[in-house]
Image 1: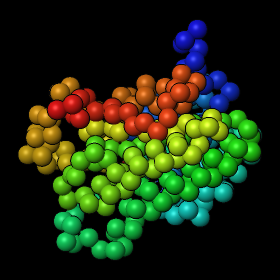
Image 2: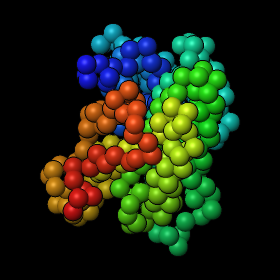
Image 3: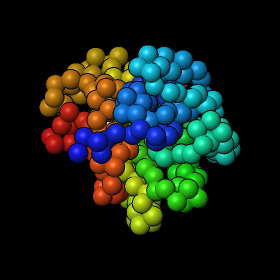
Length: 253
Ligand code: NAP
C-alpha cells in the first residue's frame, strides 16, 4: 500500500545541524516515520533527543564541528558502531553571514563555503561510498534555499553556496541514480529559525518578506516534515536531482 512506501522502519538517517531549527524538525519527522536518527551537531542535541524519545524513537548524538571535513570518517564510524549501517543523509547544517559584498573578507567567504558547500560535497561522497559498500542504495537530501534561485541582499557567500547546492544536487544525481542513490534537495522559503533572526528583527524587511509570501506566514521546522520523509523514503525512488521548494508559494510569485 502506498502509505507503507513512506515508512522508514529499519533505516538509519544522519542529519547535520540536528540541535535546532529545520534540522531538529527533520530529525523528529524521520524518527516519527520509523528511522533511527543520528544527529550531528557542534553542541548538545538534548532537546532533539527528548522530542524523539518521548515518541519511543531512537536518537544518537554525534558531536562534530562541520566547518571542516576532518570529522567525516569519525561521524560515519560513530553511526555505524551504534547502528551498523547508514541509509539516509540530510545535509542541513549551514550558516549565513550578512555583509555588503565589498566588505566580505576571504576568511568569512571561506567559512560559509566550507560548511554550506565543501562539507556537503565530501559528506555526500563518503556516504555514497558507504551505500556502495552496503550495496543498498541510499538517499541524500541537501538543504538549498530561495537563494538557490535568487540573488538575495547582502549575502553573496550564502547565495553562492546555495546556488551551488542546486547544481551539485543535479550533478551527483546524474552520477549516482543508476546505483539507486537518490540525491535531491529541499529549498525552504523564509522560515522562523535562528537563520532568520536578524531579518525578522528588522521590521521593514520582515514586513516586506511576509507581504510577498502567498501563504501569509513564515515557515516552521514542522513544514519540512512531509518533504524530508518523502525524499528519504521508497516513495521517491524515481525522483532524482530535483529541488523541492517548501516556501509557502514564494517562488510562484
Ligand atoms: P539554524 O537554526 O541556524 O540551524 C543551522 C544549523 O547548522 C544549526 O544546528 C547549527 O548549529 C548548524 N551549524 C552551523 N555551523 C555549524 C558547524 N560549524 N558545525 C556543526 N553545525 C553547524 O537555521 P535553520 O534555518 O534551521 O538552517 C538549517 C538549514 O536550512 C541551513 O542550511 C540553512 O541555510 C537552510 N535554510 C534556512 C532558511 C530559513 O529561512 N531559516 C531558508 C533556506 C535555507 P549551531 O546551533 O551550533 O549554530
